[in-house]
Length: 329
Ligand code: SF4
Image (cartoon, rainbow, N blue to C red; front, side, top):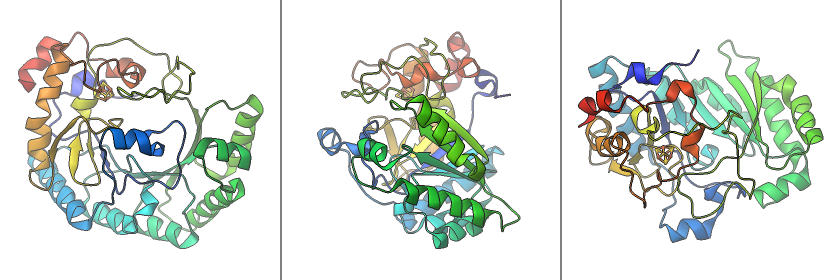
């Protein structure tokens, strides 16, 4: 049963946190802004890898917050805009996070292409709790159409199988989740996906295309999505729960209140020169108040955001505006 968000606010420590080891990716998926260099150039989005000084500052700040407020994030994901395995320090990051003991779930989402046997062992031994494999298609041709590059489907499958096999050797097993986005998959493709991966994963899911926050480009591939990414019905609402519950720290230390803020327009501070406590408990209030006052600027990614409509009943904050304003004004 998911937590009823309105009942747990205000959160002095974010419920879910994304830390981006890199916003670079070796795929160029047609439904993902990271795959469109021209679009990223047009919004001035920088590219890079998170360095260990920035990572350590984030973890130290989070440790202080967890101690100060006696609240822990439910999950910390080492992933946001890019492919996390491209950062050679990923294993070290997981190790540091595990040692800090500030969450019960350390997660990564990966396309699996760079997951060697050595890397699999490194991640498991570092203390990874959950890995989510993003599978893009079920054959080579389908992969090429989606990721706009050539890759062998069998190589991806072997990497997933090997991870599963290696994982069985350890007592603290990583939860393996395998998902595919249904970007024009046929029903036989869907069946093939489920049949091929079911024996090598703890959980498995078919996801749906979604619109992104305020995108100038249609990443839903002309499908006009009528479902959320998880296949739920869309619900009209004014107040988004993201800024009240989630925090994302980008590769360069910028912090944004939204995990789908692909253009980084919602950045409210940088962890290199401010504490995360200040960013979360002070800087983010402006965006929260804009939502609570129904005054989202037309230029904001939140204006006409499709992703917002995918949040389900337990995340609804509409109707709670007056009560919540006193915490955030
Ligand atoms: S409305 Fe959209 S862009 Fe704004 S915080 Fe929510 S999900 Fe992100």
